[in-house]
Length: 336
Figure: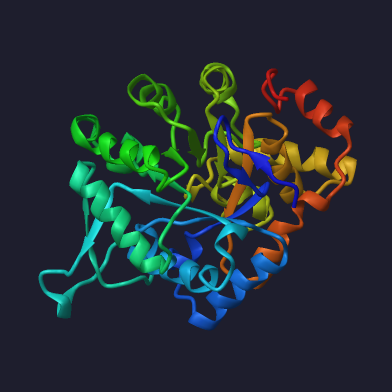
């Protein structure tokens, strides 16, 4: 795949990346052989950007990514992982039951955005990956959507400002990492980060899809003015843009889709059918039309999903399709 430069950094990304959530066993347990074959398939299809996190399966995703990647030349791929949590032996290992993940590893997490927490998270990730470098680190889950309390968000931002940012800046300054980013799940997070920190990029997990483009009004222009790059995650909006509306229960933003979202998706599907375009291909290609988007990252839990994702760029989509979406108000007027 032809690579794209990420913002003002020297990092070059394949336009399609693979994310580590499914292989962290978010919905179901995945046998080791299936996980290995999924990652091998992604590699064979030309994907060279891999994004994971300690949180994905409480370390399991990093272990699986590392098992495949450390067998490849280190300069042949880009990998990013995240900071904000450290992992520890549970107080009672015999009765430990982890929340959120269907499977994963039996470790307890703590949020920690201090200097020591960032450095410990970084060191733990290197050990799980079996790699002595990662290309990029992202500040993970620092918004109300993930933490649930504005007071807690502000407290953790304070930890990051007081000492955690120094850890990230030190790693970047001495060349241990090539870029610092932050994960974004909701509108409003990008300006808050840019006000406080000299970030290189954002991984935007929901607010820029075929169903949502409000970031084009204020937040993406802020990034463009500063040379801050964008990676788009969850191009399928967590489900509905992959499954369509024909399934019994489509999901949007990880919960059942509202009637309004279903209705909007049906209108998009109708235009897809008129132009001979698949909904999946449109969902994947739309974010890449914006000049500051370097890559689109989606998880894959099977060989079939890895192959499908990698080949979405092969689909030929006529310009008239995008024009029609905009004409009928299904795309923001500022859409590229």
